Image (cartoon, rainbow, N blue to C red; front, side):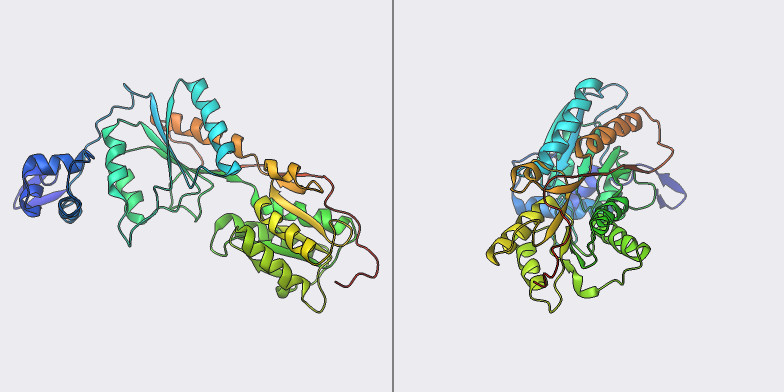
Length: 351
């Protein structure tokens, strides 16, 4: 609320004030607010900065109670089987709820500290009733914008811990790390490494914590040199595996925190003339289609991606109806899927 003298102005500055501040006409300012394309980039920049500087509130052009038919799904990319599983889950749940989905890829990236306001404005213009974000890393400004415009949203597997009150759905990553490591321990492995994802990513840290917990419960000392971060990148996982093999006391098994990275692990082992699982046991995480296609088929921890996405959609529908979930964090269980990439350690192998 902006106060001027004794008067209260709940609505904030008018569009005319914004236009004057940016040095443009009111119709031009209106085009920017409504996400129109026919505005020069420099003009759009000036208007957007004026909107932010003056705290102009862009009123939603939809009424969730009257037009609940459209929901946005924002994914990190569309070229992975991970995204395909998420899309499948959302589509099935949306069909049951009588909703239509608009899919966007990679639109939550930021330029400096400023969110990509163009897409957010289009969200308002097309009348979307809510948003699902998958693997998103939103800025404080983006969170504030969504809250300011009273747009319901749910995070699917957020990159970082969301702010208090933000509703999210994920997998039991810590338990998955425990399960993967306990499986290797039960086979007789003690020299167990982990190829992790991003050090700053919530799910990766939870999986590594589960790995460490399982080792501690088995009375096995944690070896820092056995923990390698590869940022969920297949080629980096390949290099990190070679580093592990070059250790004086290389591991006999490795827990890889994504199936995609496991492909890089397989490649590194093949280059060294080593076989899976005779020379090295490998456990992945995700249970993507790739886990069944590679040879030998990958033992992995299944996280229910489609179910996570469907759960998020159902939570979003409740929020669109004005019902706030009792818990802001929903975790779905993971389970080990045993295939052919793990076996008892070969006696006497030292890398």
